[in-house]
Length: 400
Ligand SMILES: *Cc1c(COP(=O)(O)O)cnc(C)c1O
Image 1 (cartoon, rainbow, N blue to C red):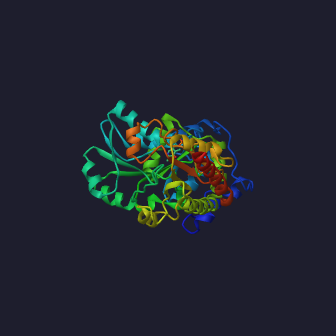
Image 2 (spheres, rainbow, N blue to C red; image 1 turned 90 degrees about the vertical axis):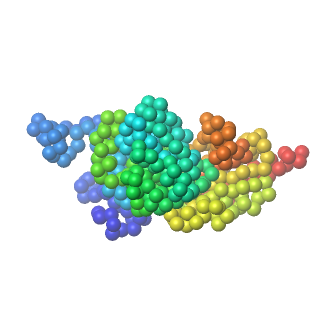
Image 3 (spheres, protein in one colour; image 1 turned 45 degrees about the vertical axis):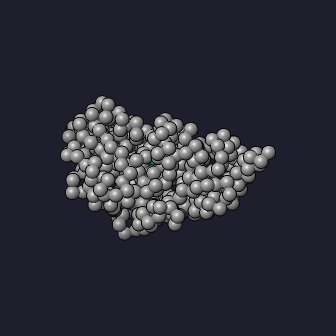
């Protein structure tokens, strides 16, 4: 089925798989196999020589994984995609492929903790240096560009403060320098944001989050131009080997079928919860991309279809009040990760960002009072009721 002719909602279900080639099986079969037999020695030779199409060994390619890669390439509007055993396997495979010793990376201020760790590893091992940049203006980025700069790495929205980066501005600023733009699109999924269509070079995902969507698999995806993805496939994916299992690829294929439906519900619920939090007397700040009071609202309107499923907020009180609030929740689960059917809540200062030194954390806008909510697919009334009763009980504590 050709990608360009159908709508996103149809492509998530049908693209990249032909039932007639698989005995009519409606669902993509799970090719739970490590290796593939050759009919003859000559066929084996031809496959290894690249003269004949066909499977060899599942670290190199697997039909279930291929179906997932086909689908993700289409949904992100890229030429090719590769699936990995985790988001970090995807991020590291791409960064290893794009850099060599002594190169330089520009990175958005506030990236996923393990991406931060990977940048430090690359620096220590291979002298690949990096600079963090708020990426608010072109000038700020231009000041950091050096002859060795090969890549600009961007997360938007930034976790957990929901700051946005203008991707079109980034592309405009660095294109003439031949710098590759890599975007971690985990928080949006291709339903809400399509960086490749804005001229970015590579999209990476923790498919653990919205792509899978059900909190039952850890996986990653990279999407980009064919030559680059082929290079990643033949080097950093094949030789470092962080591949996805066929069963996990199947779980993602299953999750993706409902991606647009889930994302719309995540967004609708999050919009509602953000509005209600804004009106609550014990909530001092609410961070949501698609909120007209958000300083980056203009960027959201430009590059995101809706505001996403994550809402961060600050409550009035101490760290102990925050912990008391979390402990009072009944429906909402205390957990890191995001994008699941269940509403999840976490405290960045003591959980996801605990390793960031306090001073840097504060400068990133992560106070002890900041809470991140991954709004799930439950009825918003029930999510709100749980938040409200827990907020209510801290206010009672404060007066008792
Ligand atoms: C979770 C996450 C990652 C890492 O993905 P894993 O699947 O846990 O390896 C990378 N980037 C972002 C934005 C994430 O939320």
